[in-house]
Length: 256
Ligand code: PEP
Image (tube, rainbow, N blue to C red; front, side, top):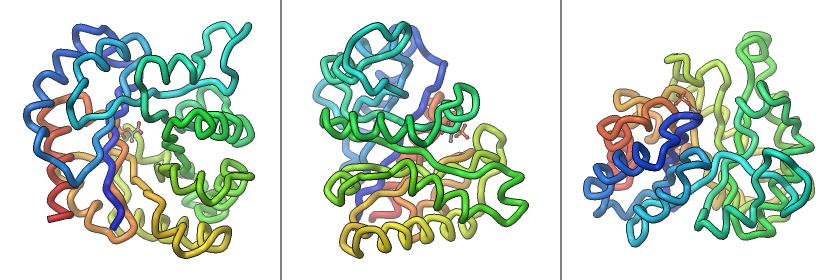
């Protein structure tokens, strides 16, 4: 059985070491006995070091929100995967829709980052998802297929198994409009079909696919109970201890 994964994506919030640590000091004792869910917190780069220290010997893992595909050089403002490894990151979010839409990251660029992350033994969480107009035009599956083909180009079966996919319909991110469990499950099942076409059933059954888009304590459990949804990537609700804990508990409950 796949282990659900709950990722807290703090985006450009809680960037000071003090505020990041403060929240985690409250969360750590609450989740310390949860074994059936992987928990990953991705703070801004400026808080990574402080958060790593707080998370030492806990069951919460550290993730970054982005990285570049080169290890060093004249790339002002970018972050090297080597630095992330050195600081103790295990996960890295790649291709978040905010990176794609605001910073114009393409599938080709994300594919380069993905290959680099895998080569450095970082676990990638790769985001894909459609815009509202694309959904309304009935193009969701077409868009997902294209993103999958391009973003996962030349990714081997072994690499795919080490990669987490986050299906995040863009219209649901930060908007309070969650996909219904049925809408989310349909696309998760479709992503698995695409994985089976490209690899095989065993690979498909091993890849974790999170849902992301306005997950809240009141909708989390129903989403996580869908057979193809393996937890969630959480933005807004990951900024408060109570709501993040409730969402982690919802994922845990689905495995009891
Ligand atoms: C996200 O940023 O990946 C996300 C899903 O945000 P929110 O939960 O706020 O919609």
